[in-house]
Length: 209
Ligand SMILES: [Zn+2]
Image (tube, rainbow, N blue to C red):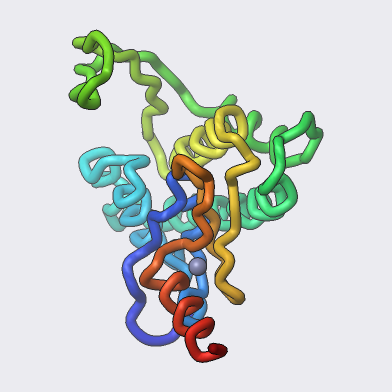
């Protein structure tokens, strides 16, 4: 059960799909779920960069509360079906798989509307080659709370199609459930964060000496 004031959600996954799994966590032996209520879900989506406040404003109206709660329950159930897939696939090259979550993601993606748009390109990284003025963005419009899961499924689809699963890892903290994509140069990342698990492991090693 959740107790005490809830800390800020974790965005340590380097992937919105992994941070979606991390939206329930036990950072200090207390379990927190950042998707506990409909408004929680909306706040998390904004913090995760998967939706904007403006887009979500209609879903904060009292009239949308029941549909939002239904959407939240569907999203949490999806989260717990995505988790075993990631648990099984992480740490090695992703082979072809007929895991049922793949079909589920495709079914969710198929039900949302979708369009491409031209948008200004973000500023180029220093040293990057020729800057582009525009990029093509792929958007799933949100007309009702039931569309929210489409954004999450799109993030999961990107993870599965684009991430190197050899570097998808569970934090080494003994009771830590957080996942991350290790994008460090030498792929030696071990912890969700130094503050949460890295320092605790160092302190434990120090006590043993
Ligand atoms: Zn950790």
